[in-house]
Image (cartoon, rainbow, N blue to C red; front, side, top):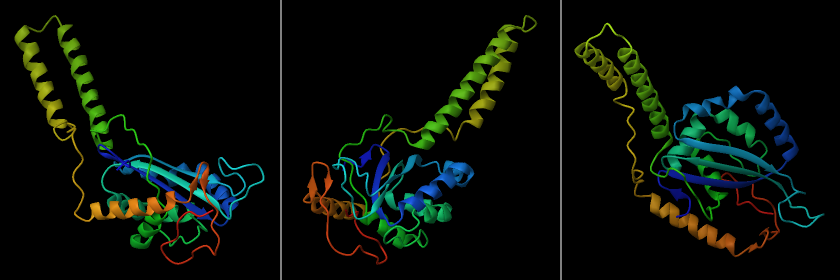
Length: 247
C-alpha cells in the first residue's frame, strides 16, 4: 500500500467546501493565534499536517474560466500509529479546531463523536501514488529521543574535557567522577533509547479496511482524466459521513 512507508502513514483528504472564502477567513484567524493548533505538538505521532484551500475557480490543471461545483479543502498529514488511532487522538484533543477548519464542509459531521468523523475522512481520502519517507524505521518519538541522547553525549564530552583540564585530579579520580556522571546520564536516558524497526502490526480489521479503500480508489480512477476528476452531476451529499470529493 503506497500510503505506508516504514513506521509512517500518509493521509490525503480532498473534501468539498460550500464557502471557501469563509474558511480562508478562519485560516487567517488561526494563523494569528498559533497557540490554538499548538496542542498538536503534544502528539508525538504527527510528522506533518497541512490544510490548503482550493477555490472553485482555481482548480489545478483546469483551463481558464473553468469552475468546479464546490471549492475544496486539501488536507495532508504524515503520522505514526494506525489510521484509527491517529484520527481518534486528533478529534479528542482538537475537536474545536477541526470543526472550525472544516466549517461548512459538505457533509462534514463534526469531529466529535469520532466515528462519523472517521467515516467522513475515509470517504474523502485518496491513496498516495508514491510516498517517500527519509527515516522509515524511526517514528517521531524515536527522532525526539535521538536528540535527547545526542544532548546527553554532548554533556559527557564537556564533562570529560573539564576533568582532563583539571591538573589537581589523579587519573583514578577522573575515571571515578566520569563514571558517576555517565551513570547519571545513562539512567536519565534509559527510556529514551530509540528502537528502530518495523511498525507494530495493525489490528485484524486493518487489511479489510485497506482493501475497501483500494476498491473505492479504483472506482474514482475510472473517472480520472489527465488533470483531475470528471465533473459529476447531481446534488451534493449531505448525509452524515460526507461524500467523495466531487467536482
